[in-house]
Length: 309
Ligand SMILES: NC(=O)c1ccc[n+]([C@@H]2O[C@H](COP(=O)([O-])OP(=O)(O)OC[C@H]3O[C@@H](n4cnc5c(N)ncnc54)[C@H](OP(=O)(O)O)[C@@H]3O)[C@@H](O)[C@H]2O)c1
Image 1 (tube, rainbow, N blue to C red):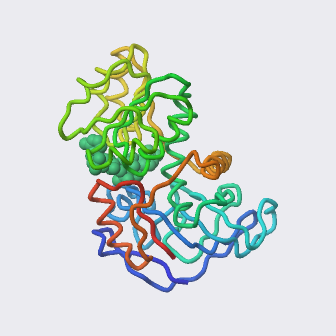
Image 2 (image 1 turned 60 degrees about the vertical axis):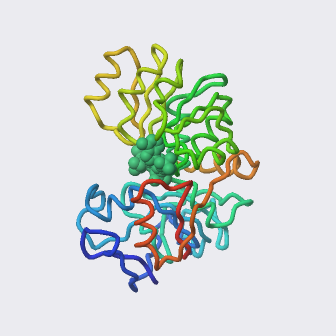
């Protein structure tokens, strides 16, 4: 099969199209013919060696996939050949998502949302699960709560805005001005252009701050209500930040996303009901993985970047 592999850590140019063996599904796994694979910031961190989750190269990066079940191994009862599935299998171990085939545990996949094509379905798992596990499972957001999302226009942010809104929250987001109309359409109530305004002057009495950018932890304490929660997807293991937040009378939580088929089923239902719309900024063919990495590393994506396979 064709896959993007790398022989060394480095810049986007280390990503090469190569021919490799097709993975064999073990018992309880399915073989998925990948149609689309989304690009996430962590892919670039693993590629460059900043976050060496997969050890030393060679390896195949990529986790978010949407595709068609090609083969089922013994023990699989949830899927049949021909079913369309999506997910973020194996994270944070190797899934090999930038490839024509992925073998994955059946319980780390869910049925693709029927109303989304593979490109949009692939855009959902990692960013959507991060937003869902963070805002719903960890923060337990409730109707009427005020939620501030830093980086509202990005992969995680634009889904977090919709999930917070769908749970009845009053949603405030920081984003550059060219993303404000987009975020208003997705349900954001108040928007702050972080390039021209100081969010600490523009917002107050927040119940939950969700930092998807990094560096917003301590400044956000000025807008949290007493006992409010600082949730971060970036400085999730920053013990110093956690201690400072708790000392000041607030709560701290770092989210580390994990495979979660019940949550994927919920995200699929929300997508099919029109309550969750993943936005794909650009879909590029698999061979253009290096270009996709340049875009994700620039750090100003609207929604998601997806590779078509
Ligand atoms: N812990 C976990 O399990 C987990 C899971 C998923 C992602 N993450 C991390 O979460 C972060 C976001 O991921 P992502 O997929 O959403 O990234 P992304 O798609 O690249 O989005 C980042 C967004 O942040 C905005 N931004 C950049 N600088 C900003 C600033 N100073 N203030 C406010 N917004 C700013 C950008 O747009 P504009 O600047 O144009 O507004 C962009 O839309 C990454 O660091 C990623 O590694 C962690």
